[in-house]
Length: 84
Image 1: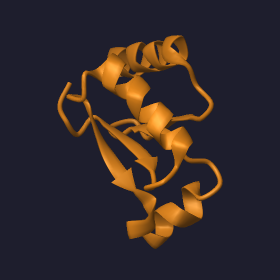
Image 2: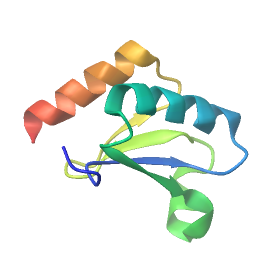
Image 3: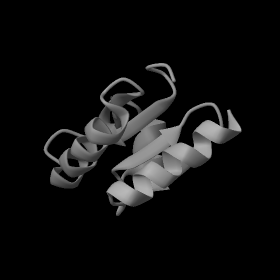
């Protein structure tokens, strides 16, 4: 798994995004994802403004939308890793 395999879409000041980041840090050990602030991209704002936080597996474009918990995140990672 490389640093570019997953993107966590969110924005600064979003407490749900902070919660999702804490879960991603536990499951991905801050190695398999990057934070993407949607404010920097009009298209991302259009796609995710009412959905953040969202974790996307970049190779497959499969996304996990909030709310998700530790177990759901682990299952998502296992499912996307097994396909790529």
